[in-house]
Each structure stands twice: as structure tokens, then as C-alpha cells.
Length: 191
Image (spheres, rainbow, N blue to C red):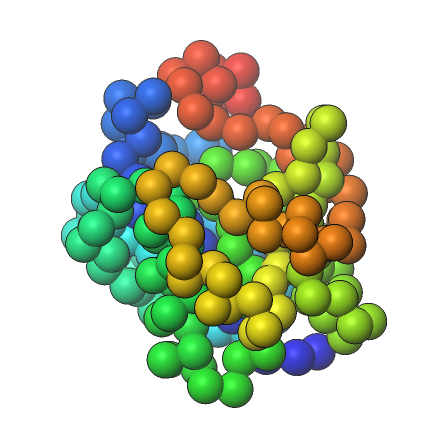
């Protein structure tokens, strides 16, 4: 498998939830730690956690894990800016990275094998691969190195979906991927 760093997006303030979702505890583990564990278990490559809101608490929640943390000071600018910072940071830290995988902390259905399947699409010649669930596509998603520059141009609250569509991303089904945690009621349903 190629060297594909996995970027855990954990920088936001979770305004809809009213508290930082990355620090919510589900089944005894914070969501950010669970996501980092899945990323590590995948074996795709090194793991980079993008922290912003509550960065010190996120660092503490990741204690003892083999991950690198990047404190993204402009996290209030939106998910686009966080993705842009990640696409700049990955090649700086790992110049031999052939792609990167973006994942959130709020999709409990994501598994290590799903991340490996995304990474395998790169070996099959894909420029991008997206998870498909419900009636949409999204993260976790893989972006080949040739798309890093395009990712660095993202800003505001716009994510990378348009890049996935323009790159004719390979779709990898993620059963249950539509279940995410954006509001307090979502966590209650998850429990």
C-alpha cells in the first residue's frame, strides 16, 4: 500500500451541537480518540489530527497514541480552511505521501477496513475516492497528491465534495455512513 496519511478533522467548534463534538464520549472513548484509533489501525500511513477549538483538550484526549497534531489557529474560518491547511501540512511533514485521506470524528460507521479500501483505489489508478452513503458522497475520502494544490484553495464552510465530483471519484460504499453527530439528539440516537 502507498504512503497515505490519514487526516482526522477535529478542529471545529461544533456550533450546532453546542460543544466540541470531538470531545464527546461514546462507549467510554472520545470521538477524536476513536477516529484516531481507526486511522492508526488502518495502516494506510501516518495520522495527522487537525485541532483547533479546544486544542489542548484534544491533545490530552489523544494521549499515548501514535499521531501527530497540528493546531490550526484559523479553525473559525470553516472546514474549507481546515482542509486547505491539512493539504499544506501533509506534504510538509511527509514529502513522500502519494495521497491523503480526510475523515471526520462524527461517523461511527467508519472502520479501518473502509479506510484501506479507499487507499486501495489509489493503487488501482484513481485520483480520488469518496465514501457513498444515503443519497450522497463525502468523507472519508481519498485525494491523490495531484489534488493537494486544489485542496489548498478551499475556504469557508465549503468542503471538498466539488473536488470529488470533478475528479470523478471512485465510490466506496459506507453502510451507516449517513449517521453522524451534529446535534445533541444525534448523540442520544447513537446511544
